[in-house]
Length: 297
Image (cartoon, rainbow, N blue to C red; front, side, top):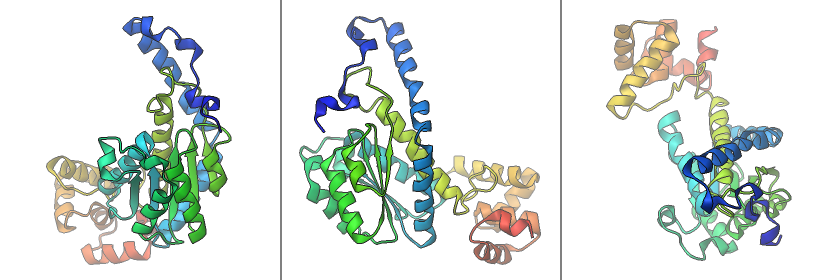
């Protein structure tokens, strides 16, 4: 697809005089354009649901969720992967973010990296991609060679493949078992896909990771019961989660938190069932980590 035909590269008729607008006018127009993003995503919820089903299957078979992209798209994938560790208490290897050019590209563009089909394949080989994994290729333009190379290789391995683009009839969609295409219209600053396109990608990545984690028992009610209490703020949050889940007193929450060796989910089961720590751990294992499946019996 020619670059000028991409919706993400076209000029927005509402902002042809962007350089002449007052700050208030710019903010108003930017906010107006941003409001279009959730409605554009709504049209793709069916495809997003299919992607989440595949990710849950990967997790249930000891597979991984692997994001890959270049530039802003790559950075958003790395961000979402990194945030899964403290939020859901998972290993850093369970959700992986790959960016064209490597870690250096998070803060400085690595020229030419995104144009290499082989680099996408090499990066997946480096992390030993398996058929159990789900690869999500992210590209606002929908044509990034790095992502195409990764998706093509993932298909040969037998991994699940998902593409996420912000243009209709995107090239990368041809290489994904589950293509997600979101058209939120041209950016207020022509071609600056860190704006609406980036917002759309971030919202969808939120959906993919959060809903998949719910699907494997990392959430009880709407609480982050596998949160890692790695600092003072998170310890306070962890104890509060225990209180909210069990309607216990602050003192009971603190005691259970300590007895459970700071494992929030274990502490909740201990309070709700009367089990000791070892019993709670064993029951959670039997229930595949779902608190509801322990407490409803």
